[in-house]
Amino acid sequence: MFNSKNIISLFVLTLLSLNVFAGGGWPQPKGHGYFKLFQWWVVADQHFTDTGLIDPNTTNGIFNTGFYGEYGITDRITGIAYVPFYSRAYFNNTVSGTTGEIIDKGESISSFGDTQLGIKYGLIVNKPVVLSATLSFGIPIGNEAGGETGRLQTGDGEFNQILRLDAGTGFKIGKVNAYANAYLGVNNRSNGFSDEFRFGIETGAIFFKNKISASLRLYGIQSFENGNLGSQINSTSIFANNSEHLTFSPEIAYNINQKWGVSANFATALSGKIIFANPAYSVGVFFKL
Image 1 (cartoon, rainbow, N blue to C red):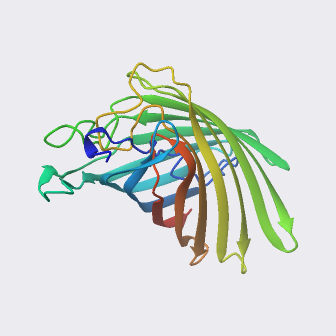
Image 2: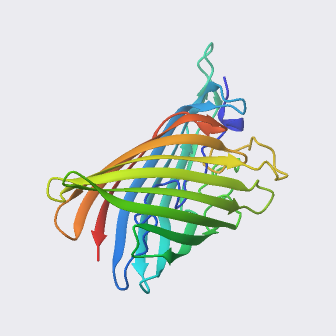
């Protein structure tokens, strides 16, 4: 069995892959904003190998409690922040199937997580099809080598930059307001990590007099495999090198009133390499300024 000493981890669930990116191709109008407190977690006992097969592993988990926000500085410029202010990572004991004795003792750590700060600029606004560009920076303030053996992580120790282009359009299906968005991006990673190509499509609609919104997302990461780190890292973390995936993620939100609401989603990899094969979940409370 693949144990926690050489587990293959889930891709970094940053600003983009956490799917808390509220605006898509639309920047926030000046003085408007979207702010969310969220809880995200994944508990995994199996993973996709570097050949795309699924193997079992010692149960690992990570839980992120954090804040996500977008604020319109001008009608074209939006500031963005993703801050996991509490991150807990752990792995269970590895127990012998024949003797029952503990082969590898479990551990856990808690700390601040790696943070993302960014700026979105509206290239085309107030048109049937809008276009925006986002530049975000990964700030490595999490713990990259925690626990007695240094295998637990709440950060990857590398400063990265993501450049992303979003194109979106709004439309009606009968009397229902709907939208579609697509994006392409490149993640420039440092410290020996491979750079990444990122892509995704999303569609959604608002129902029941703007009370309930639902969306479907399909997104992925493709590694350029141009780093000098190995594909398998000696860690139980979400920061593996050369991760690849195609992920499906539905989300539903309930607008309590015009300002406050709650949301929930899950994300599951349809295929992948060097990622967990178990779904991730997220719930949150949001406020619209």
